[in-house]
Amino acid sequence: MPQEQTAQALESEELVPPAEPHAAHHSKKVETQADLSAEIKTIGDRYAQALKNGRGPETMPRLDYAPYRSSILRHPTKSLHHADPETIELYSPAFGHQDVHALESDLTIQHNGEPQGERIIVAGRVLDGDGRPVAGQLVEIWQANASGRYIHKRDQHPAPLDPNFTGVGRCITGDDGSYSFTTIKPGAYPWKNHLNAWRPAHIHFSMFGSEFTQRIVTQMYFPGDQLFPLDPIYQSIVDQDARDRLVAEYDHELTSPEWALGYKWDIILTGSKRTWTENEAYGDAGDEE
Amino acid sequence: MSKLTPTPGQTVGPFYGYALPFNKDNELLAPGSPGSIRLQGTVYDGSGSTIPDAILEIWQPDSEGNIVQRTGSLVRDGYTFTGWGRGSVGNSGVYTFTTVNPGPTAPGAAAFISVAVFARGLMNRLFTRVYLPENEEALANDPLLSSLDPERRKTLIARRDPDGGLTWDIRLQGGDETVFLDFQKDGSLDTSVNADHSARENQA
Image: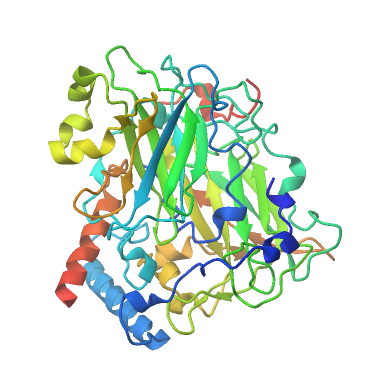
């Protein structure tokens, strides 16, 4: 259980290398935000021109996106090989309420006291590319605390840990593909990709579909963040409409009176390839078997 | 063709280590139990260095070739084979799973395990497959393998260890780069890889 790892235990571990080593391997000079922003702009301008020339919009991040320095040696240089999914790939692992306790979706009650920060509800639906709800599937999240600090031992950002906040949650989607988490709005944090690099506030999301080919790990952002144009990870999705799909919307209907602000975010998985039976199409998944 | 546009993926980042791993995540079967084997390997970057912050998932049929879809992966009872596991690499870039040899899902089909790769610095998860090395006729007839040239094909076939286990390394980049798969018919991922390469070349 992730909750068993306390802030104190992690703090007492010996120092480990920082999560994002300085980008010095790439060039000797200190790289500033202006340097990175210029690179981001060059790639963005080129993409805008390609769109004007009639190319279709991109929907996924670039695997080869040099402004995120750690990607330089970690992306395939050969084209991904097109394959028709077969057998096991057309099915997905099954999760159920045996795997996840209902309380794991509330990140504010995992310790004895209340965590610091702005309490929020993040909710939405997981749908496949045809709009079918993905029912009975696992959603996992992890995030920094309100001051922008992860409990992870590799996070060396000198912002306070919160003894009442671990920042890990899980839930199983409902019959309509719905999920809901109660948590704390995460803070922005510095990450050493370049001098003065700050990540926009975000929550990491991990989702399964009905087929393993739909597996996705991504990040959800908050509307209006001033760090969006500066962030190489967000900008690795070069298409503005595609980037916008990672930004939740404030939803007053979801806001809980005298309690928490609501943010709504739906996730669309890639289209399914399998021919569905009627039962599957109506969400007969989960732990009934 | 899908009606809705999919949500983009993003890198798993550096801080998944307190969130995604769980107790016995890489033990699809208890180590040492009858029929269990070790699947292990090392994850490398484009300079040949090991990657210490990658996390893998495997998803496979049982030894009879059945796709089981049983719940209970996150809280393993020690008896139920769920077919799915998750394994973080250690500091030396090595991952390990305890599992079974997957059975062929149809008579004469090549047996393989489906793999998803996540890492800090990897913008989106990658899919690939690891095949059992033994049935050469099945491997030769496999639709994916037979569409690859021999050098690339080798990257998807595990080596059988003397103790019955499997060794299979993953190379994210380079001459012997592992074959990664695009299951989307529109080829959007392919396009983005190529497009950015030509962009970088033009800059240079």
